[in-house]
Image 1: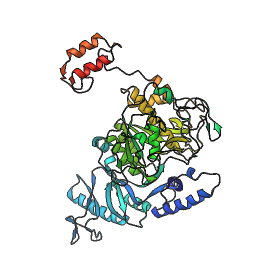
Image 2 (image 1 turned 180 degrees about the horizontal axis):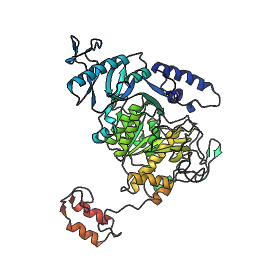
Image 3 (image 1 turned 90 degrees about the vertical axis):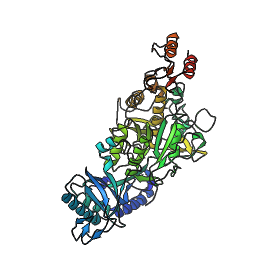
Image 4 (image 1 turned 120 degrees about the vertical axis):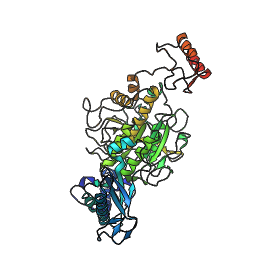
Length: 538
């Protein structure tokens, strides 16, 4: 199967009616891709892309069930259990054990599971996570900790295997195909050289004069804040060490490869990262939205496509490693429960997730944008019109420029790209600016401010094409409550002698580090550094 998401039609909408196996999905994708490419007036990448994993399925074990291995067989005995002789279990074969059952019942279920797993072609059970979720209480409540990849023997049919495992009542809660998707980008025209998305002066884009002011208000926002060093996770194809991101790419993870090599595998994640956080006011190349943000690269695709389980694993890893803000310029359509549960887990950790609606020009908003926990971002052009490729539906929250967007490419270059992949990072960067302006804002406040500040487009009010409207970060900042001033210790709006008196009377080690307002530098001691900071804003 091609690694290009443009060349793989998505087949999830056929799953309920056609029991296609792994090999059938691959053949169907290749045939449909060939047909799409010969249509003269339909961009190949607007065909729904994807399929499912060809070597594994996903299973969620029932509560109280754990995976295990058959340690050996002797005289019809499996793990010391008097086994059905037809099991023929071999050392190392997977089985399932029910914890808390009486020994005889648990042993019989183990025997049954070993037989069923072998019959389905399962040769190994692997956790989908590169690391177990740190908030195990939430993970258990969601059932997120009970998901496994059931690796299949070569040539086995995925749909048939899933159907067989669903019959393991009491041991398996779900058995699903692992949906394949990719990056929400479409081809670009390399002739354009202007960032109309940030400041639209009516410049010509593709022979069309833009609409003055059809931009996201970035320049006005920068009069207030350039962004702070908050951590933003980019779940994508990786990020190359471009000079415009120097010193701000954190050590990340490559989920499909199981290592920490996070170079861009598809010339996509770097472009997305540039929109979010390329350096500004440096007389070089371009400007991103939030100039000081730190980027946490999480590779969730292998090349340009990947599986929903890998995104679920990458998302839990990202929020467990400090990401308060997550960009997902991705499009998946199988809507596997493990993916949704990972989104719910991240939401429970307080993360703000921004996602692309997808590029199929239809009313089927892609995952994860489809789910309420994310901000679903559609695409507009330089005339404030809906991009022709942008998916639509009641799930759309907001729109942002996504046609011919200028950003980073490789380690030194720049390029234009189009897609809802380019729209989402504008919103992610805008969220970072809001948090920089007022760090005390909650996740839900940031979301509400982005929506409230949007410029209404299309039908009055919220609609399925633009959501609340096109992003306007300047308007959102204007609506935000002003930040509290830490040095204003008596909260009277003025830095004066009263604040100095409070600081001096608090001099020395704090009795409670979390309740020591005069400790302005967070050292748990009120001292000269705090005094200097207060006097600097007197």
